[in-house]
Length: 220
Image (cartoon, rainbow, N blue to C red):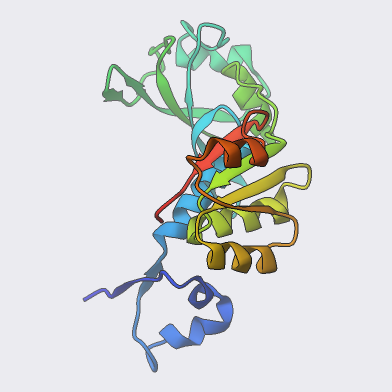
């Protein structure tokens, strides 16, 4: 039987513990961390504004992206097989269209996308910005993020932002005083606010009224 372990204590995800799950130690076939998956999903959406889902493929060389069509999207009302005429140098393939809750898989290229459609496409990572522009999504990357909740997900997300979003300021609101101190000691560039994320004074102090992105990951 396949053995799958859910890891909640994040240090055990460190590569230095890789041998711990070997056949000679703990015979684990797959390790999963839902907290890490949630953090990665939020991080990807910060990286690709306008997308509701983003997955890296082929070691980051390709991207699977979910995006919603708008009235302004250049791709609407155009047969999918004609998209190469509109965007001859764009490496993008439409994989699925969700309309009114129903999934359709384009097969002959005659299908057309409509406003409100939720579309999944795959593209070369170097073409991602152009692919998003084809759907009229050219939103700028967030420059300020407030995270409500400094648990495992909040900490991982803040760490990711510190490491990979150089121009983004991040703040965490954490209710537990001891946890807030821990975060302050372990996150180098993140502002930590000890208080209730439902407290209007704390929210104002953290700058929620001017922040571009608010992420709630309390009780994780």
